Image (cartoon, rainbow, N blue to C red; front, top):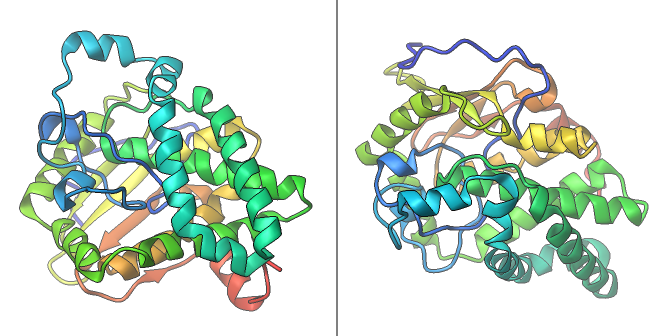
Length: 312
């Protein structure tokens, strides 16, 4: 395999990632060019009224961000607090789409209680979400991690285990994706392998290696081997895992990562992944084969397969 951008793995063993499909993540229409939308892979839940390239963080969308605005928004608290209303609005929409999964697991009455408490917990977490830059996909990653953490905290308060929270999160992601038309999912999948997207991903990898944001992500782009995969992404640092660690919830990360299976199957990514930082490895090795079979190795998946009743 040939890595297009050289990268020395981070030496901090705790600076790492809840990968890809994590969670309900929101769409920001603020980046003004491909350069400002360095694309990553592992796309989360679909926001409303989003074109495929916008959803993937490629191309123009929304108002232009001036340098003055950037100066105002650069800072963990200011950036996310200024967007709190939008974050909660998008979260409400996602919870509506995921309601069937919540009700199927715990019944209507408990589902209503959990939904209300999760929203409140997420609202409390927003000010502490680390600034990871203004890349739309990175913002989705980190806000999705915060949402998954809110779900876990609430369920834990009700006596549920991390395994149960992980299964619920997985089912909620599945319900959200299934609520969108197949045509939309197909278009997202197609755009994930476009020349425009790959060019932005390469540029994004180089940008991430500057390590401008201590709470953010660092990754490299892997060129196709011409046979087994069309391209890949190796994560060496992950804002998601860093955030979970700071919140005393590192145990949640591997279960959040299993949601990548849902997204790969839905978008036709053909994801191949043998390890993640969340499970103690030095990196997450994402490989993508358009239309291929999803093959993801994870101890969290093995636990679920061994005990299909997890979540009761």
